[in-house]
Amino acid sequence: MNFGLSDEQEMIVSTVRSFVENEIYPHEAEVERTGEVPPELADRLKQKVIELGFYACNFPEDVGGAGLGHVDFTLVERELGRGSMALTHFFGRPQNILMACEGEQRERYLLPAVRGERMDALAMTEPGAGSDVRGMTCSAVRDGGDWVLNGTKHFISGANHADFVIVFVATGEDQTPRGPKKRITTFLVDRGTPGFTIRDGYRSVSHRGYKNMILEFDDCRLPDAQVLGEVDGGFAVMNDWLYATRITVATNSVGRARRVFDYALNYAAERKQFGQPIGRFQGVSFQLADMITEIDAADYLTLAAAWRLDQGLPANREIASAKLYATEMLARVTDATLQIYGGMGLMDDFPIERFWRDARVERIWDGTSEIQRHIISRDLLRPLGA
Image (cartoon, rainbow, N blue to C red; front, side, top):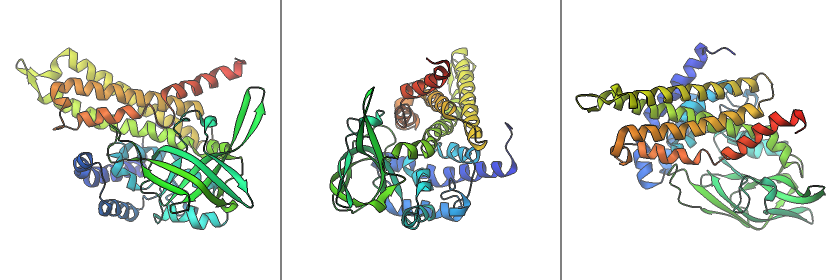
């Protein structure tokens, strides 16, 4: 792996960071205060990204994307991690799982999503089934030539802006020596479909303005044309495409940690106590040393996982390690920065308390830290028969 960035990669980093600093930062305080992103601002951000040529940059060129590789896209996400998720959402990175679209689905879902004409959301989590995907109760059954969906999904990010939702539901059950095993199918469901309701979810202390929504299916009838991939093949679709969400959380955490660290470093250099900058005190300076070491380690873990994907190498454990370490690193960095700021760190005059609150959810969504440890340990033990 080459640890240096090419000229093109330097341009990517510079362009995205400039966008975040100039187009995202100025609106963060207002979004944090109101918990809303004005529709006109959302449209303006999306249009600027389209003009930059970065919209759907995670998709291949043959479908209209920028065709960035995994390392390049990781650099994009790292810079976006510096900004408010409620606002960077409109930078436009449709779910890679849409590459599983076939036939008419490409014209109705994939290509409009890449062009920025339609926005998507991914729906998997349920009130009684988070990390336990096999435990989902939202189901679809055959009725004539259609499927009828019933059940509830929650914690669905981006569904408030979505024109359609990619939904995972149970479509059967097999009996195995280890007990019943759900068969999962993926459906494409348009907003406005009869029997499909999107409503406000819960108020979260993390990422205000980046809302989680509740989806309700009440005898929602769908034809076979809405099945993404194969019937009962939802896990295959997940395994092919959803690794990207975990590596995105990891690299977002690195970007946010670097922004937070800049606050800690500058404050330690400027804030004086006992006649000298607090950064001269070992209790603060050693914290700074630990913080930057952990940030760099998380950065390299994440880039190494992305590099493996670019090389076509197995990367499940490496992605899990990156997600685990980067999100827990972010928690430590934000907490240490708040401690350096002292009482002022808890005041909303500074964004430190926001970074601290936002960091908490990263260890939960897209697979908890415990799930990542499970993935890592299974990868290590399975070859030994344990």
